[in-house]
Length: 324
Image 1 (cartoon, one colour):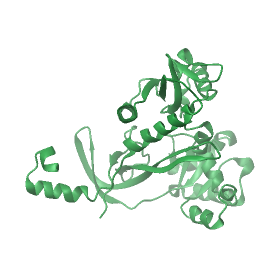
Image 2 (cartoon, rainbow, N blue to C red):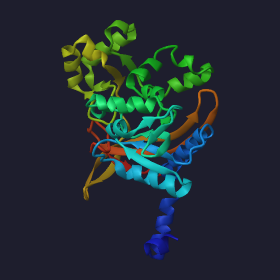
Image 3 (cartoon, helix red, strand yellow):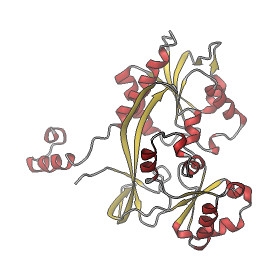
Image 4 (cartoon, rainbow, N blue to C red):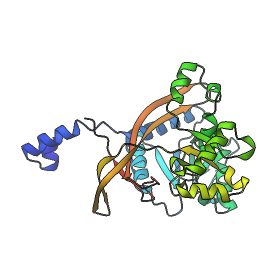
């Protein structure tokens, strides 16, 4: 019980129980390893290897290792699967693809490559890292994500899907496609040779009212977007080629809430805004779908007036959903 586990009084246990009943289950630390384990099982259908491992591709001097470790522990303790952690440079130095394209590292056959790095230009400072990435991509290991899914996550692809008729190429039911589009923010190209009339109009409006927009490059992790008056400056000063690296997005203004954030044991209080992300796991081969499930959530909270939203970059804090 909560009382025994935390040494609570009866009154505190009652209050804690009421609180926990309003917190939805968030089993991302279980569901993600479960999906990785299912991927290993699928890979083993075409292999007789008895030295199987999952490869975590990580950054040099990885700062985000704590949540990664929980996934590693769960993979081993619940599913009996060994994990290797290697940078792209280490992959280039030690990994080989056998004649059947099985990826082998230090005596382990890699069934699944889980990318926790490789998403930013900083991860590829030399040709060595590109060599490592190429070795991984040419192997038979299941990739998480696949290179195509990696590209789908870029802002440019999101912007193209928002154009009229594009989403319908992938969603057969027009009613479902229409409902999905209702969740889209405005997204417009800044590539001069492909701008449609409404995109030219949005760019002109961004020059007049930049606070209503965000310029986003093909980057992840926070610290790369352009906001406010800097948008007008950028649109005026950038060359066509520089501008084409960005998309223009309608800025979202979430509802503000009373918030207390704790960083480095120091609390700060004020109006905050939340961003809810949903984890999901998918495993398929283009024809058959093995896994397609909800896998938990990530809630980030930051103070009102803070533009960026990354946790690891220090802009926001982790939070929990409270259902009332």
